Image (cartoon, rainbow, N blue to C red; front, top):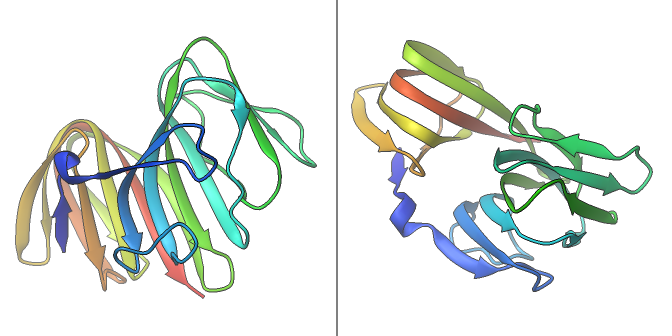
Length: 191
């Protein structure tokens, strides 16, 4: 288990140079954009334009802040994403263009290498205490807003807005969360 503080997240340019991404976690640790098995990051999208192409990668995206954007995904009808939308999964190796609705947005991206890892992204609203079953080997809980305390096995800690908790060897365990927060759980499943 490892707490990843917001102040320590790695800032780097987008693969296509069109903006900046904030890398929360990547596996293997310190992998570059061409060599990761999985990656969780946030990005601010301030202008309309194309998404970076990642060969062999699947992506799920959710809007964290802002008034939304429309994704034009090759082969699909345009998809409007807002902060109320469910996470949207799509291949990262086909053309995708974004059109902002009204100003910049911040999104959360989970990407996995298709031939070895799958993933699931779930929104978790916390108001009081709750238990979250962990079904995959690697799980990352992002506290987007608010604050939570947690207990996993015999370990405890707290997350403020922007902090994340990375748990490896998590399958079959349970994470107990207390507080008031909007969180997202990324579960990585090895094929």
